[in-house]
Image (cartoon, rainbow, N blue to C red; front, side):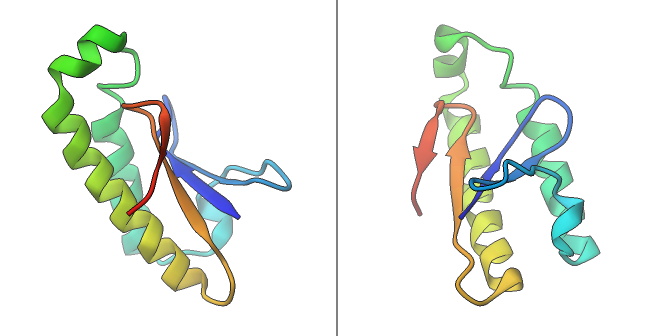
Length: 98
């Protein structure tokens, strides 16, 4: 099982078994990697906020999470087989399901 999450520096696509987190290593298409990196850059503005600060950006967090859920689904499709990709919201600090 893989988990997609935004992070301070690079987006995280972590394998729950090995802990490996590099998005590049999974062999995804360049355009999908570019979208993931762009989404992560937008999310970086939210990550350092405290809980109150996050609530004032709820609409932005929800939009970023919709994009993150879409990206997680696309990653799963690209990797195929039995690969499952979960999504973790850095804005709400919890896993989300689409």
